[in-house]
Image (cartoon, rainbow, N blue to C red; front, side):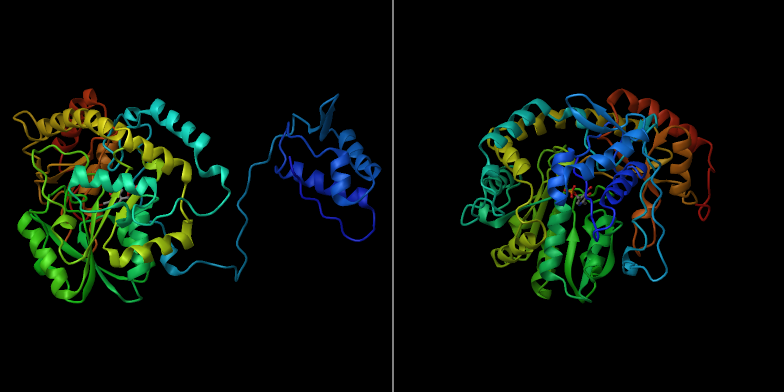
Length: 487
Ligand SMILES: Cc1ncc(COP(=O)(O)O)c(C=O)c1O
């Protein structure tokens, strides 16, 4: 274990070494069983005689803070348990972040330990083809660019990096997005793609429109770029184009599967949004965060492929089709923006994680992603059908909840029929009954809140869905569980 020791002056050097090693053991920087530097090495690095260091170690051995093991060196005594770490208190006048960072986005309660988990936005990790992934990561480590020791990855000229070329092919085949590798910027998730777009477009006071209800992390992110974020209502056809603020210069939308209502933006609305963007000189960010999982026959064309004027940035993610922890997503941008997006990425994360990107390029090229999405779609389809059956069927919750139709993605939203019920209270009572489900109203920004429940199907096994809905019926039947204004 490396240990930083500083000697000052020419006073008692042994005492200084003794005090610093002792402090490191007592405050937990060195734990029981850690090896301390060999006396010869520490002496050499400090420019003192070896005897100076061994004298300090001898005192610590005598105090039983260190122990020596014959033939293998000197260690922190195994009985030394690190103390509980107490966060350091801020002093008056200490550095503080700007007010934007004063509080985190309200997070959902921890669903661990609940019996029925309808968490939104998470895939089923047990479906992830770990053995294949492990093989591809090993192969990438063997032959990848890790041997180069440079910051920059493979050139991104006309074809993009190997991953960017594969993403262009994938988005072209599966979503009819029109792109070559040069149009793709691989990112650490859709969230970073949005961050890069904001970095290169947003200036302080720039008005950005978002769907309301919508994706709260997008609002927070755009606000940190000093945008003025305005919420625009969503109806059964998607964002209400006529309600877009006149001065909006960028709009963030989720047309395949509106987050969180699930609505698919109609074709008429897509055309109207594109016409609006052309008229206003505005940019559309099309966030296609979970549309790999489709449950209707014919998906609507993405805005990106309808766009003839270079107004759409399409962003995507492998967080739902694979795993959020991989942190891979992408932006597919008009040619006028790609160089700036790449530069914005370079000054934040350079090329990102070469190992994951290399493995994912091979994963896509060898057809594993397509096969995995096919398999996972079957699993999610069965869960979704069971959920819809339970929410709408004769015996179901149809008298309490009104399901919003959707055709893709990993969650379903249903409105509470009783206009007096508060969804936060219902969700709290559901949690007490073992069911984790997310309230809709908290995802509003400025529009009047609708009250409903959002059910994710990524985290709940098929056989738990019916019992979960039975438990939820118990909660809703016991209504009025909480009236509006109560939560
Ligand atoms: C609408 C929307 N956009 C973006 C993201 C972020 O995805 P990523 O994990 O790729 O950053 C999410 C995640 O849930 C999302 O729901």
